[in-house]
Amino acid sequence: MKYLITFLLLSITFTSFGQEAHRRWRKMNQIRNDKFDLILPEVMKENKIDMWIIMNREGNFDPLYPDMGEGYVGLTGYYVFTDNGDGRIERAALGVSGYLLKEGGAYDHFGSALELKEYVTERDPKRIGLNISKAIGGADGLSHSGYKELAEVLGSKYEERFVSAEKLVSDFRSRRVASEIAVYGEACELSYTIAERALSNEVITPGITTLEDVAWWIKEQQFKHNLESSFGMPSVYITGPRGVIATSTDKIIERGDVIMLDYGVGLMNMYTDMKRIAYVLREGETRVPEGIQNAFDQGVKVREIIKKTIKPNMTARENEAKVYAALAQAGFNKMKGFNKFTELDKTDVIIGCHSVGNWGHGVGPSIAFFNPVRLDYEIKPSNLFSIELFAYTKVPEWANAKLRIPLEDDAIVTSRGVEWIYPINPRIQVIK
Image (tube, rainbow, N blue to C red):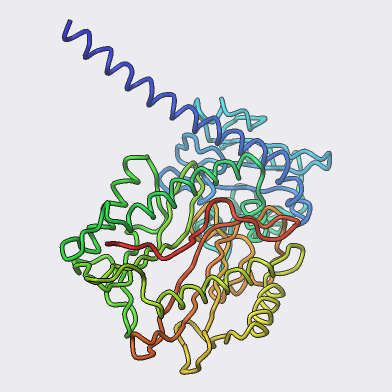
């Protein structure tokens, strides 16, 4: 009887694991099919690319390998997409195989990598997009040797038709379908829940817990929920009158500390990026000091202005100019560079509202100084953004040194503007 009970318990456990894995696989298949049906025809036409070839080698996969459905690749394999002008993109997997890829239902044809030249010649595309990019790592999957091999296999006639698929990759990944947003919402729920638990007395005991203890607790939660991350170790750091004191180190968290958390999780090829803030009460305190609370409140005002100002169907650069103009009108000062705050009695601000989604820092339009190329990309409805800002405000309790308040939560841009996907950061969390 004892062995029977053990067997049944193990069977239940394995079944539950199988159900969750199958659920996630089905969701990712739905996303893939929806994007191939709805997004790919649009973006290939806009970028005037007749054929898109994504090359993979065993042990050296293109960054879009998860988006394409993965699969088994021997020496070399290709995902090939062709716009035949009928409104639907033809999809082939040459040299890429496997049960999961075939059962996903996204591809019309499976064949050998040796078919590539014949396949291309039959369709005779005028412009062939390849994943080559100086500015976007996620669009730069083709290696130098891979390029040379493609040129050799297809010959000089088609090599002359090779073009960068940089913008195509950005458009394909950053324009979202409903099934994708549903998964992203699930990832965000897990992300902010873990973050807010991390910065609480559940995890932190003042005078005992270290910054790295908190970071490792977060990592353990990611492991428990089978979550990935694009940021490695979560950034758990203390900010004082002279700036950041320590990040995810053995520094012990003490009373009076202002703690920041910057991290994100990955679920079903969707990655979050968000921040949370906490204050550790000193003996006798019952709330956050007024100066620190005011600094947070100024950051919230900045966030509201950003949310109300960003609109689709204009470039990220045009949106950036509008945001800073609105902030200036509201009495905030635009900084000349990151951490270049002033002695003004105003709150200094810099924004970094970047693309997010298939990586913590996505490949779509970006209202951020650190993504200069994508500042000139047009923001489209369904783009996901990390609404990120840094607001520096004087704190009387710190002899008027400025406290940097970083706020960051993920949102979607719709025809109406910015809409939050989940409950955003409402307050400084209090650790007793």
